[in-house]
Image (cartoon, rainbow, N blue to C red; front, top):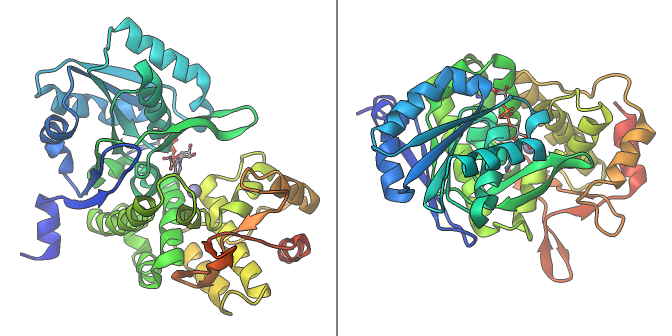
Length: 379
Ligand SMILES: NC(=O)c1ccc[n+]([C@@H]2O[C@H](COP(=O)([O-])OP(=O)(O)OC[C@H]3O[C@@H](n4cnc5c(N)ncnc54)[C@H](O)[C@@H]3O)[C@@H](O)[C@H]2O)c1
Ligand SMILES: [Zn+2]
């Protein structure tokens, strides 16, 4: 049987090791939703389920997914919140947890998060905190959620002082990424997710980055086989990293490549620049920074720029951002330690530079601020 034919009937499975929770499987492929009842009984048997999603995703897929879950013969409560990052907040966390209390969900309940990264983070944090913690299952529907946020156990909400500042590590019982659910995703949301796939290639697998670039057309058009291949490889990479360093004591930092400058650009734009676009530009600039410091092989930034452009993302920051403002935001980055801004730097596409810090490998590095200013000044 060809790989394509095989993909239409079976899920590809990647396992994630966890010390915070149990080890968990991630299943990827078109049509894998039909496995949901079996997976729920095997990994997340519960007296009742809360299917949590934003209004857009619940309108599109909520009834179908609830119907599949109801074949288990257990109550399924549908909980909807308004879509958008602005609703990944404590107000919605209060509303959702109060609703679960009113519906009488006990410690034998389970949350099923259906949606993009906003839903995964918010519903995951509801599960992490409700009655001191009940299981969560992640059903990602956006590319961001499939390739990134559903794996790794980070949950949380945004607060006025910053994004993701209140939360918990709460690994899911399993992740089911049915790529057919992503067919309804608007194209601009699709390219936002491709930024993280390019990042996965840039940090550990040059041929994967080249593959994402080569398949950009199919990926942007929502082709199931291309999307499945990408999600599988990204999940393998993220699973490998978080299995080795779940709590981000070291290696997990490499997933922040492109994010130090990306976060500053996002904030400097007043969050008008979407996260994927900011990371896309951040990766190019951070590769240039590494080249300037003599750490990153010449031509790396250019290769990343070509991949970023292929997946329909910007290669330059939006006009009108002020350099002092960006530099000010950088020094307030929550990953800044002892006042130093730290960057994940590449050796080349597919390989992260790991220097030594007191004998231990260091995955992020402080960089003189004048070098950062020079890179930003050049755009
Ligand atoms: N926990 C983590 O490790 C982690 C990692 C990366 C990102 N994140 C978080 O993820 C969030 C971004 O995720 P996102 O980009 O998925 O945002 P999102 O959840 O807001 O989804 C983007 C938009 O697409 C819609 N949508 C999602 N799936 C759809 C589908 N199948 N069909 C039609 N519309 C669909 C949503 O309704 C929303 O309007 C951020 O809050 C970020 O902090 C978390
Ligand atoms: Zn990101």
